[in-house]
Each structure stands twice: as C-alpha cells, then as structure tokens.
Image 1 (cartoon, rainbow, N blue to C red):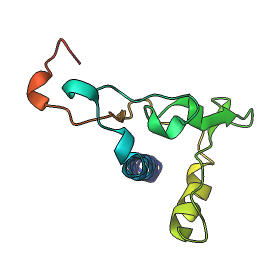
Image 2 (cartoon, helix red, strand yellow):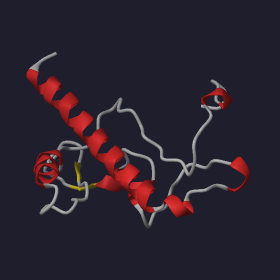
Image 3 (spheres, rainbow, N blue to C red):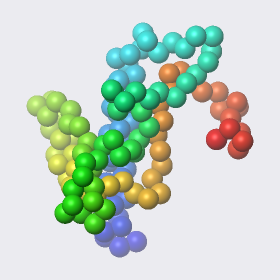
Image 4 (cartoon, helix red, strand yellow):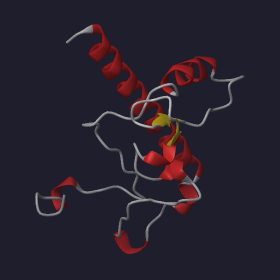
Amino acid sequence: MNYKQFLNCLLTITILMYAQINVRAQQNNDATDSNPPSGTVHALFDLDRPETGPFPTDIFTVLDQTHNTGRRVNLPYPDCSVRVSDCEDLDVINTLDGFGLQTRISIPFDGSINPGSCNRKDV
C-alpha cells in the first residue's frame, strides 16, 4: 500500500467515524421518536434530514468540474467553536472527489436489529 492509498483509507475511516458520530447524536436527540410499533424495525431515510439516511451517498457531494469525477465531497460542519478538530478534518475531507468505490455503507435504523433474523436472502 503506497502513501496515497494509505491516506485514502485514513480519510475514508474518518468520514465513516464522522457519519457514525452524527447518526448516533441524532438518534440520541430523537430517542423519544425512535420506538417502533410492535417490534417492527425500519431503515431511516428522510431527504429533509440526510444525516438520518444511508452513508455514504451523493447527497453529501456537490458538482465540481475541477475533479476527475465531476463531484466533490461536501459534508456538513458541526459547531466549529466546540469541535475544532472535526472541522479541521472536514476541511481536508471536503476536498476529496467522492467516496471510495468499495466503501462500507452505514444505514441507520429506528430500533435494534436482531442479527438472528438476517440471512443471505435478506441482505
């Protein structure tokens, strides 16, 4: 693995960590709304609140013809007066031309998932 590949991996990990932190913070804020009826669990997805949907997604990119992909990452910033290092990381991440081609996806749910209820046919 060369330095550029290492840096790409590091940035991908940072993006995923940032997304997970934001999703968990949002879930903590919405704890009273997150009790699914009768044990049914649903994937969250709201176009008005993209932080509650699947990640990564092109919702977090903008057109940028200066990049080979024609897109650039554009993740939202937290309160930079409180989370200074997160904002410094985002200054770098938001210069990238997109997300990795084989990036793991994160999908938030409105409740806990029983791993025993999932199999190859379901996923």
